[in-house]
Length: 266
Image 1 (cartoon, rainbow, N blue to C red):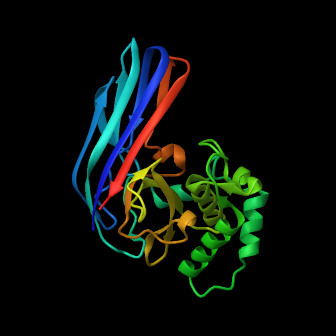
Image 2: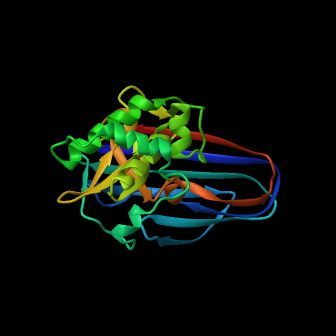
Image 3: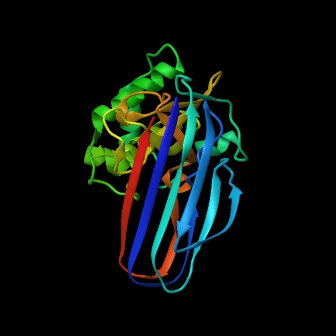
């Protein structure tokens, strides 16, 4: 399948920015059953200083914001060919060693609620994929999908306590639980082509777990499936912070507003 994406993010500041630096992780990966046909990232109100490949094989572009700027617009668009791999990405690659993905972070630390989820899951499974799909279903049953109830800093424990969250929270919970069970696990940011709409409010997120004999396998808790050709993988990391599409720091500007426009279609 060929998936076409156009993603625009506009930041507006109520006062002029004195200086700023942002990391952009918006270029899809050429791996895991997908091939980038064309892709371009443009910037208004800032300057691309350099780009590099990080420890997760993410293409990172550094953007500087000049003094006096009031509006910054980042637009990426392109096409990606995807294939159905049943969610299996394959063997590990990148500079980060596999053991690195067993590390917890503040957002993915396994506390009493994550530990209870793992106990509730039990151990009566034929294989690792069955166990992990059951974990995904248990998380969705425990934490319903609901927008506006959490934010980028919400931890896995906090989302379970609230009983609701979004795809980012579901991914963090699965990652925390999988690591507790001994699996390497990571966060994925990307895009999902929806069947009923082209325009979307935001990108998507899911988790990948490394399974012996299969390599990395994707699990989208929010939709109860492993990624199929509708999914486009962009960036991976230990948690949202290492895979965020745009992150950074801005001095001055004070109050910031953000407008996102996203279209994903075949």
